[in-house]
Length: 329
Image (cartoon, rainbow, N blue to C red; front, side, top):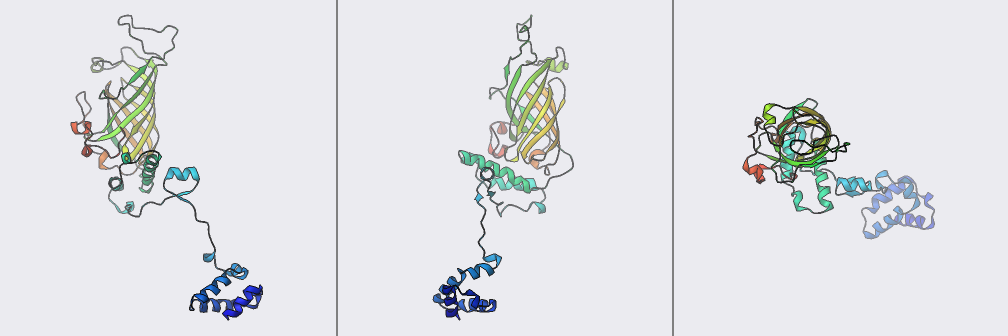
């Protein structure tokens, strides 16, 4: 039978074999020596086999797999799948804490240089897609501290008034529409025991309000009652970041809109309340929906805002036990 099959394959007269004969030849060929395998290979290369072979035997084009999300976006290929050792977040008490614990097992992003570092950071942020999000509101607070070691803020006198006004008593520039303030300060959790990262942003001065502010504020050095339009971002290490926009009035509390985020905060919606403690110390309270269950890193007991509130020395010194892993600096 094998000889007949081989002869037919060579002469092109494949119609001489019925489908049942082909199946029988295939079964017999699996039991014979390598020569039989060679004959089977010859048969499988024929046009008849091509026309009757099952779908599983047809060659399929495998998608190109990339090592990072960013590379996949550039090439259109499929990114790598989530590691199998990633916890099952649907069965854990607090999925966010489990993922942060998993991040602890990965190399620090500081150990990787160049473009791969960016790709690695992006991949980590996309792992938050596996963590369930909550529809109800959740609230947490953080501190922004200017510790005078980041050359911040930078006040730029861009006002283009007809006359560049100055205070007749002091000769100082009078704040006016067009002036800008760029800033970057340190970010701590509400307990002031954990360094979370940094803040960064730009404030465009809208108007100066002489005489506004509480008596306590007016006694503080460098206090000038202003209203700004602000774009800023809060960075939270492996949690990702939150971006916001809106009014910042330094002599009263204001609300800014959350415009977006990545990682833990990718689907965040809500507002953040800005409270000025001093010209160099601010207290923010986020009220958000669409984020995972808040972890202990963001829910510690809050220190009441005051002029004397300060981060613990270990957090200021960036002791690893008092910092969020891969925090921005």
